[in-house]
Length: 567
Image (cartoon, rainbow, N blue to C red; front, side, top):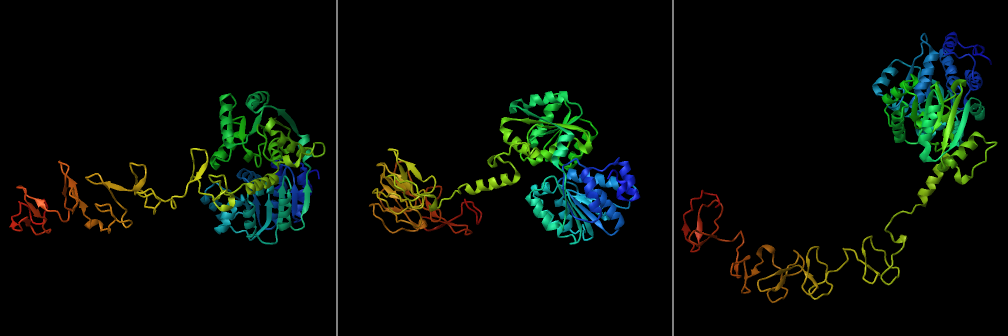
């Protein structure tokens, strides 16, 4: 097939292809379009930059023009790839077509997307998460969908969209045409194809045909500390737009700032940017407003800029399959491109995997221990997590050693203390450690704060020292009895009625110490009498009576106080 006219496409579609300067189909288009026009399911494997988007969009537009009641759905892993597919669809539909398309991606306002859906689009392009949101909110109906495309399926599964894909396909009819494309075909893709594809036609484009014919590969073994100086030298030697891949998001921002300060106008593209900022960066890069774009692997798929002439892998990808997508950003649509890799000694194992992926016949197969694919990385992470011991205080984790070196019961952390001879004594828990009484013996455990150290070093209960120097026991409320003046334990009176002893040893009301050292009885607030100006004591009257009684019991006049008020 030398041209598109032999496919017997509609007139409007041929005009659109002529405006897009599509004259000769690519290998993936030559094999896919005829089978898709026959209504067969397709399982395609092709690298990026081979015209794969037009391979499933051209038969989609032709099928929708012939079936007015059919709709189509295209699912992509990233927002950038969805916008790229939408641009190709709009160019193929042309201005005179009755077809409309809508783009449903995350990061955009729902109101804007609802306005697109109200116009009745027959082509839906979007990411799995946002498409599933509209389906659950019943703002999108796909029961008339007869054409389904899963683009970059391996990337969608790696990003965790497998559950969303399953949920979305439940809203589609059982009879439909499905086209599944992926740069690589791991076991997960094959399982998914068996689940949703019916007798699919297998189409595969060899990767080495694309990588070795129009892309010049260079590798440079260099220390990590010398990479940036070499990068400046490479940028001086190269003309045209350059795409640099870095490992981290913050690394892209830092490198773009440093390159701009060193005379190379640059900008960064990473996942931390919102959708408006992403669109602004990509539009400026397409308009060649800056030369260097520093990006993470978010730009390895779905970034369709024809004037990218050089790809520099400043940091190698952590997964070998991502390298194929990185270098696919240059040499697109049959153009020439170049790529260079900075390989530090720490990244040699990663490069061995990439080299074997590109040259399986000539390169040495790396050992399974150094294999760095997604499946191996996930399996190793699971084994590391399962082998990690759990922290527990149960007896199954082994006992601690006692002071004699024997294994005893394991106390809680922090309950052991080291003795002066270097051995470790068990420190019992607070709930079981007894306190010492006045004779130095271990008695019942009093409440916290009720112990004090005596002069002889022994620990007694909390003491109060009386006037003659003797120590009385002050026990916690509701526990041990009080000691009387002879040191004997008596019955414990209630707090409000328990008298304290004065200097003569008699029990009085609440006492206080006078200036001469003797203790006078100090009546409690509820029962203490008041003294008048002449020193007489009168009792506290009942509130509201307005009169007080003196010590002789006779009534006296109120001392200028209003009725019901206190002094």
